[in-house]
Amino acid sequence: MPFDICFEIVKNGDARIITSRDLAMYDFLCHGFGTRSVNHKQNFCKKDFPYAPERLFTATQVHGNKVVVIDNTSQKKPICCDGMVTMNSQIALAVRTADCIPILILDPVKKIIGAVHAGWRGTVLGITAKAIEVLVREFYSDPADIKAAIGPSIGPCCYEVDNSVFEAVTDEKLKKEIFSKSRNRGRLMMDLRKANLIQMKERGMMEANIVIVPLCTACHNDLFFSYRKEGSKAGRQLNFIMLS
Ligand SMILES: [Zn+2]
Image 1 (cartoon, rainbow, N blue to C red):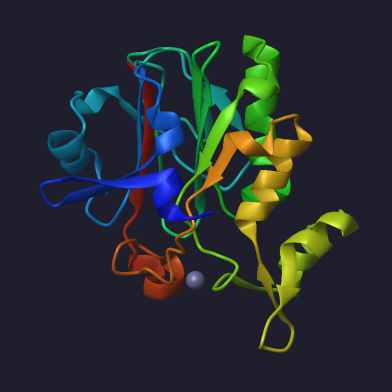
Image 2 (cartoon, rainbow, N blue to C red):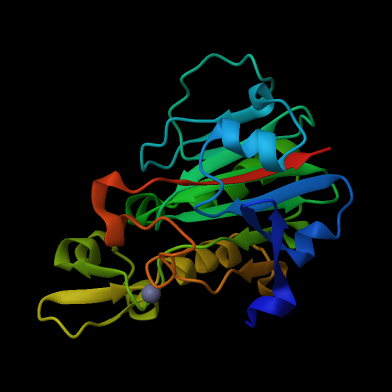
């Protein structure tokens, strides 16, 4: 999907944030996918986000499939999880990424938000499906109402994995959808975005309600941090969503 139709780069001084036009329609919502210029709490809150840093809620990300409902900002820390959901308008949920997928979720009817961090491990464990299940089970969301934006992440152009990742996916039909040949022997290209899109559709979401930022973090290393390009020293983009 063409970038300009679905997304906008919002500039604020040196900072650049990517917003989904679909989510930006809701005046009770504030959201954005960070870039290299938006990478830690202080810099983020000062430059781009008119809320106090203590409202920004981040978890310790562990590449699992745990989704936690965040009720208040004083909730005991550290919380180890890769998915968070809240209906509290005092809380900005944020996930940090550098190649992994940030997914921002909104039920505009029930006014519930979620943020997910999905690398290959979390994707294989079904983290995004689990986040949708929590919305449905805990907040009685209708999946057909839920909207989601899949943020900047490593694309199938650059995400080369070895056979152990291929073997970790047990659904043969899914394998055909998300893996393709690599130029290198014994390696495969993986489409993490598609894998998460499929999870959301399988949980009853409509494809028309899901948008994908078509920018690869490794191809656009000037704009985004990329673990594959920079190694363990890579910084992290901060991606956030908040009811206001
Ligand atoms: Zn790429």
